[in-house]
Structures are given as structure tokens and as C-alpha cells.
Length: 65
Image (tube, rainbow, N blue to C red; front, side, top):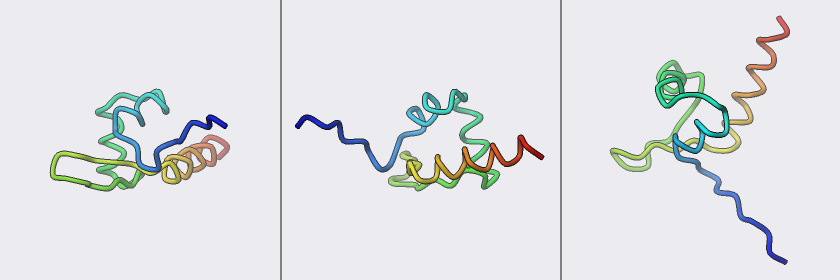
């Protein structure tokens, strides 16, 4: 079997591609606390796949209000 392994922590650039959002929008969401991120090194930020799923779920809830 040749299953593709998905990373558990994604770079901001990968999150941008997944969500169709700009880099500045992602960092704004992180700064506001809407999207939780991990600082791996002083210049390296990562977001978990689980956190992206939570963020998307919360957006859907807001749309239906």
C-alpha cells in the first residue's frame, strides 16, 4: 500500500492554501485567538489539522446564526 501520510502540524502557508485565506488573515486569526497555533522555533509557527477542523466548524456555526 502506498498511503500518503498527512502531517499533523501544518505551516502557515499550508493553512493559507487549505482555507483559501491570505497569510495576513491567518496571522490575524491566530493573534485574535480564533485559530490556535504552536511556535516551534522563534520563526516557525504551526497549526494542527485538528485546530483547522475546529476553526472551520466554528465558522459554520457563525454562518447559521
